[in-house]
Image (cartoon, rainbow, N blue to C red; front, side):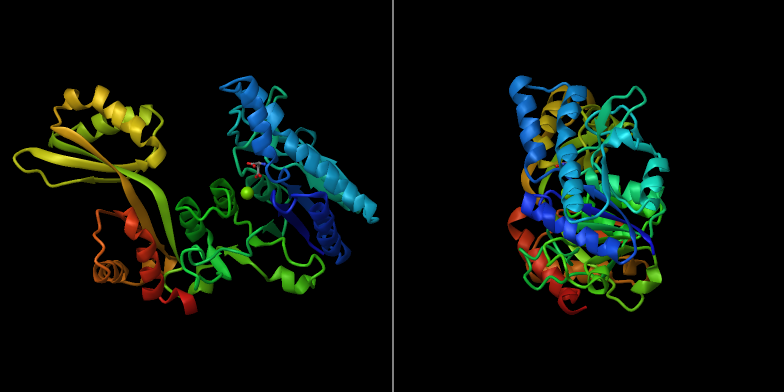
Length: 416
Ligand code: ASP
Ligand code: MG
């Protein structure tokens, strides 16, 4: 017998029919002798609908009141799922975040979990009940409802698994795992049986939107084994098969020894590049350029400063495409004249492609293999950045899919 947390996403909870299927799947795990906590999302589309209502009433919704509204989607889900379990003869009880309580800070719309009380939940589990806890929400020190940001139920589930010292956190979703790359771009993309949490962090932040990034950080920091698997299979598939399906986010790098050096190719279409031309090459310039960008709450990703010629240099960085216009505006208004730059040029037609793998730590030549592949395809590299387990390049957006396909082949990901 083990304590296991199940998380079901919006698609899995998308209709009362699907909720009944979730109940059958959960009951199957409970019948096998496990203690089960379930953390569901709101029914698909519901959170968007609620936020839409708020915006109809107040253009820029008040953050506290917005959470009051947005959190109700999950409250409906837990009640329905609990009833679906009761209806098939299981013992079940549902809780909103504040009832557990799941305590958060007061950063409405993007709150962070601070602590989770396990007393009630343990008592219920010991009484043979399946406990269903609303994802995405908690309560602050003043009793206000606070939500964790879009996709936050993943983080709720992993945090609850950590607090309850569960054996594993199973994230049931509408895909059957984490792939070597997006199968819509490379049909030969393969599901990974395991991926280390560091790789998952890179893959998640680079645009493979399977899990909320903070849930992966939680899993990594507390070493909670977390598995991404399909909720769209027959709910009665044998438990032993289901328990080994999907992708396990692991911590054991040695499980990777026999595997490919590269685990996946990530990409992001939504990049933009900004170059500040001919700035003086002296202390403080990078700060004077990026300080106002940070103050405007714009996230910067890749950065390059070129070698200087006659005391002048070019400074290039990337931002998300959505932030491009705002960043250009900040630079033109308050930076350009101030630092004496010749001009500022922007390019919104760029994409980022990254190869990710912990195997890079012990293998040399990955970068040259990557660059050779791109050169053979005639793709120009505009910027490069690296970490211990990742190499990213910025390229013209029109070559992005070509680059991903070529790299997937070069690193032999279809048959690793
Ligand atoms: N319902 C929330 C959202 O759509 C939280 C979640 O689904 O994880 O963002
Ligand atoms: Mg989600």
